[in-house]
Length: 487
Ligand code: AGP
Image (tube, rainbow, N blue to C red; front, side, top):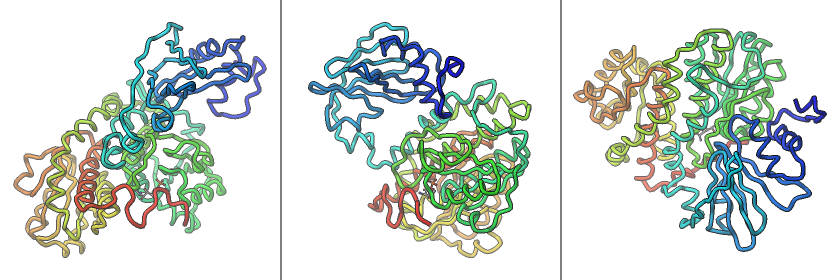
């Protein structure tokens, strides 16, 4: 519409389209033009608009936070209180579909229908530090408990009872093979993504450490979709892997949290997590949001190939934020377990199938913030060597959902029990294994596709409480950086 009316569109960025739309409606009143333009929009936005001929700012939001700061002879617009707390403690929070027009002395807030609203001015009692941690002791704990909201943001505007909606500019019918390349926690989510995509689409998926992929002269062809998963979007190995894949003619897709990061800008298309900033070095909310994004991608491909989506699966995914909230709120009991095991020298984490990568991720969480050696293993692999490690001093964490392999993991548990290993079990069938496990953390029963997102939650809390009980710097563990931008 805009191009037909002579607007010269330079990019694919939705912010630019919005600017042209406001220009289309501008007849000397910026607030009115913004209001009209926003009635054409769908999805999430948090915007501040200025016009060179007007001494005011017009701000509006839907799904992305905006706050107005009331200073002394000055007013502010920001997406988070922590950005303006050094200037004023008086703030007005905008709600969805509200528009604020401010100059240096006044603020008028209306709904998108133009009615003037009266809003309460809040007085912030917190300091910058507690604001940023939201009252939690560490960023990591805040981010663990932010997961219901973060997952809701990853899902926002992308799923309904009738299907999924992702704007990805590649033809799903052309995809013959998918390669997922990433590092660390993002590699663990890739392993789970393989289960989702192969089960739902029957397209073969390969998963590779980015640091290995980029040097093994990978065989990539035009029909390949190469997916990079990266919270920071700046991991050097993952960026190099994507560049290698593009050189060889693959279509590249990024699953990234940091908007505008290098990987996000270099891939052909992508899915932003919208999980919000993740400050703790140990990745938590980004991991579960990556899994949600991978599930959406698998459904997007299936839907795009004309296949019917399971309505119960769509409903269960939409209910995830509530399920995650419930699991976390039941998580207080993990605190006592942490006290009991915090002086252990080693841990083993065992899982099967889609939950084997959850064992890997649980082990990584523990070792990177508590410095206790921990290993994740496929439960059935124990008899091929590692079971020699088991004695009464070794805590063994089992991820034991009541799925198709439940009986097998119970026999794996019996093998450990027979050798006096201490068993910590994560299961939706807590009662049945109380006689086998020393500690059972009961989680809600969910379908297989959602079980990794639920089962990782108590393991995140276990690693946090153990590290905190040891008095360690949970948010900034030794030797680690939040984003590994070097090789
Ligand atoms: C996870 O807890 C670690 N901080 C680390 O393994 C991280 O997942 C890895 O460095 C990859 O980072 P990225 O997702 O930003 O690419």
